[in-house]
Length: 107
Image 1 (cartoon, helix red, strand yellow):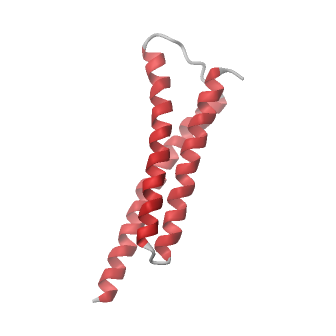
Image 2: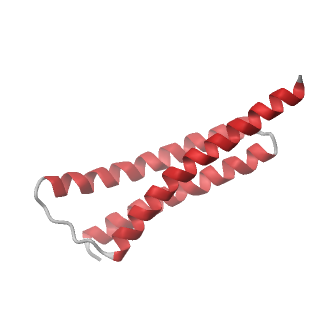
């Protein structure tokens, strides 16, 4: 397996883990377990940071003159990365809305 394929799989693995953690956080928020939801958001953020690190290495290599072959696998990794960034934003917003609604309902 080529190094670029390993990098793509590493990105996919890390951001896939983050996505799962964000979605699980939303499930806990639906049950009004906001502490557990926040823990999962933090774990998701850590996984996403690992994906960022791998992605940054790829960008650094290319910016130093090393050519990167663009494969369907690498495009998939990039697509997954961007999707998880969007999912993160939306899920955090949904959790905040649920938490705010719960606080208003408690008054």
